[in-house]
Image 1 (cartoon, rainbow, N blue to C red):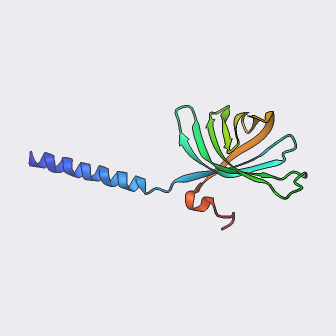
Image 2: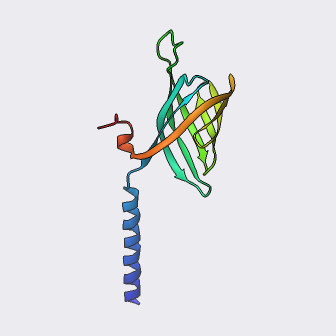
Image 3: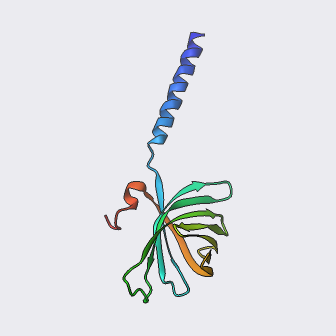
Length: 143
C-alpha cells in the first residue's frame, strides 16, 4: 500500500512540474499587416495573439492604422484599433474596432471588404505573418 501511495505521489509531483514548465513557454505573437482603401491609402500593422480552435484560429490584438495617402495635408494621421478575427481555411471574418467606429471584416484568403459606419465595401488586404516571441514582437526587424 505504501508503494502505491509513493508511486502516486511521484506521478502527481511529475505532473505539477510538467505544468509549471509549460507555463514558462514564451507566448507567441503573429505579425499582421495590410492596406485599406480604394487607393490603399491606409496602412495597417500590429501583432496578434493566436488561439487555435476546432474550426481554425482566432486572432486578437492591437493594430495601428496609418494614413499614407497623398491627401495627408496636415501630416501623417494614425489611429489605434483592435482586431478580432476568426480564420478558417477559406475565410476570414471579424471586426476592426476604433474609438469612434467598429468595422466588419469579411475576406477570402487575404483580400476582402471592410464595412464601417462611414463606408460600405471598402477594400482591405490583410495578412498574418509568422510567429515571433512576444519580447521580439515590438523590436525593429533585424535586431
